[in-house]
Image (cartoon, rainbow, N blue to C red):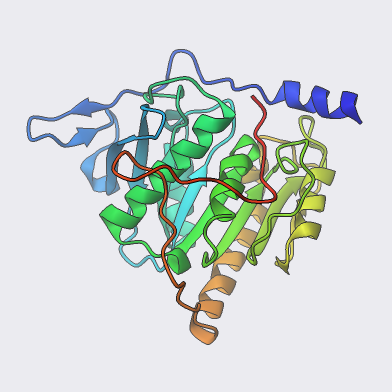
Length: 282
């Protein structure tokens, strides 16, 4: 078992594109822009401070009739500059806002990529959604692709009132820790049956551990990095979002007693004292 986990972990080293595929520029009035993305795309650019002192780039793609916001954590060998068309397509087909971000050391984000930094990164992004856009937990769907399943489940384990979580070509609890995430959430897992990087059993086991399950999609012949090209991918994802809308109408989410505070420079250190946690390979 040790050899298996170490071999899989080795494949999940961080590989940020070098050089980065985009820049962030500041206009005269102080607004941040990404060259090539015009104003009609309805996208805001942010640089967010993390607990580690890094500045991570986040992009908020607005849909005028969105009911939910998708917080997207991408895979280990891409940055945001390569994913604009995907986000535009997902926004249109799913009718959701999309908040995406680059991990520390990826794209125009400062610092170096690491397991711990991905946790701080996603916390900073969540704080932005909550403070800048007023997004509530019950309006939020977390989406983690590949290595992004680590920070996705990290945040999901701390927010008990989420609308749902999507895991796409996921790793099983960061490869080594096989404990279930102890929150009640609807899970939708996309996993290719011909994944050459992570065996599809990782996604299957994560789905089995979920307390509230949604029908998974196992894409026959799908690989680790091409699931978006299969027609059934977007069809199933849209079906999942529609199901979450029905749940929101028929079963309103109970209000949490208090909104969990995420780490920021203005707050005291949040202690992560869960019995089970998701480890991200370094």
